[in-house]
Each structure stands twice: as C-alpha cells, then as structure tokens.
Image 1 (cartoon, helix red, strand yellow):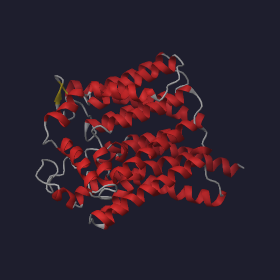
Image 2: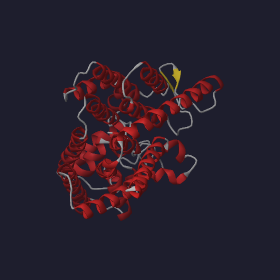
Image 3: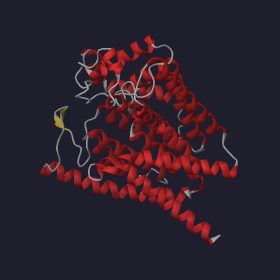
Length: 398
C-alpha cells in the first residue's frame, strides 16, 4: 500500500513536470536541442505504457477503440496513397505518419494512463504554477518593452510584435493561451484574482499581434462569460467562434488566400484540392505534400504541380512548406482521408467531453476545439507540438 502511494506520487510529479516542459518546449529547444523531440518521445512512451496497461488489465474503453480504429483507417489510406500515387522515401513516410497522428496517440493514451492521478492535487499545482509563470512573463515583458531586450520580428497594426525568448510570436502566444487553458481548468472559481491573471495573460497574448491568437483570446473571454453565467455551451458555439475568428482575421485571410494567388498558403490550398481531385479518393500519401517531411525529403509532388518556383516552397527554401493544415490533409489523404481525419478530431473531442461532467470542463473542451480550429486556418495546427500541449493539458487536468 505504501509502495503504491509512493509510485502514484512519482507519477503525479512526472506528469506535472512533463506539462511544464511542454509549455516551455519552444523556448527550451532553442538552447537544448533534444527538447524539440519531447512531444514525440512522450507520445511513444505513453503508447508503450498504455499497451502494457491494456495487456495486463484486458480492458479498453469503447472511445479508445473507436479512435484507434480511425487512426488505423487513416494509416491505411495514407499508405495506399503512397503505394498507388507517389514515390517517397521510407524515412519521410515513417516520420510523417508520426507527425500527423501523434496528437491523437498522445491524448488517448495519456488520458487513460492519467485516470489514476489525483486531479485535485494536479489542479492545485497547476494554479500555483500558472500564477508564478504569469508574474515571471509579465516582468520580462515589461523589461523588454522598456529596454528592447529581445528581437521584434515584425510590425503590425502600428506596433512591433513581441516574442520574448521564443523562436516566433506564434509559439509565445501558444504558451500564453495554454497557460490560460490550465488556469481556467484549475481555478476553483473565476474570481477577481483569476480575472487578473487571465487579464495579464490576455494582454501579453495581444502583444504578439498574431491575428489567430487575438481571435482565440476573444473566444476565451466569451467562454469565461458562459462559465460565470453557468450557460452550457452547445455545438453552435464552434460555428460562432469560426465566424468571429474569420472576421477578426479577415485582413490576413484576404492577403494570404485571396489577394495574392502566388503566395504559398494560397497556392498550397488550391493545389491541395487539385491533388485531391487528381488522385481521388486517396491523395498522394504520407510525407508528400505540405508537411515538414515532404520538404526535408523534397517530394516529387511539388515538381509535378510546378510549386518549386513558389517562394517558400522550393527545395532550397522551405520557409512555408509546412505552414498549413487542411491543404496537407486534402493532398496527402484525399477526400476519403480528409473525412476520416475530421471524424478523428470529432471522436477525440467527444472523448474529452465524456470525461468531464461540469459546465466549466465542457466549456474548456469547446474552447480548445475552437482554438485548434482557428489555428488550422493558417498553421499546421494538429500536426504542431502546440496541439500535443493542448491535449496533454486536457488529459492531465480534466
């Protein structure tokens, strides 16, 4: 009994430590190179632990079965696309399989493993940690504004954007929004103290000047309003969040997707549909289009559709090759795989919903869904370590 208690405390401390590392992953990997693989290493480790747990207990939840079944179908569609419609290096295929599916593997395995955690204790730790991190980031941000310590990557809306010690404002904003998610989950009540912490984090997010992050913050405060008024959020909330996000980011969307048809994001989207039509219904398979692996192992698909001349998509300039989500899904998995991927996302968030009964928990899940869908407009979103961080938070604290 004593040994079990000690082991459980070690698991809780490890789970919390991994949360902290994932929150700061981007900032740390600039200085410690192996940290960039942390989300992948955790996904592999949790898959192994979960497999042992299932073998020992001979129990598996229906939600997990459905998610794994859908993952296998996506895997089959992607590999069939590789076999029939393209030729790509095995290394690219293996790397891309993990890149595309790791967020789902992380959540479904971690959520089952973390069932043994004392969630009240985890939330108490989470509350204190976010408050400490907020004070720390607030002080650093003030010093940066006064003394210009860190680079300012661009000039938007009449101001210089801030990224502090992160590699890009997008990752800084992701860290801040994830801290907001944790604090909303972990706070026993959204009182004045909580509003102050969330207000500071929101202001810091605004200083990144990322339109998608600003949209996410607006949606977050709408969620907070619903929680305080004890209004149960329904599925139409995602539609409302989508409309609001498109309106807030309309200038960026117009510039990237409509005004300039030679801009990488616009080209990737239109070509994604073209690939899906040409290689109906399977697409070209893993590691072939609009993902990191497709650039590193430069895919023949780019040459076949004459994309190598587009700035940021050439073999010697991969700046924007993995800067999107839906084009990659359409191109690599076709219409059939896209449908399966949408089902996967729905299944995972439905699984999240089933694990919480209170209005606040369900509202946070809706916000996480809205946030990742907002990012998917012009980010790699669910492929990104940011998504792994969000799903880890849901697994560890709900």
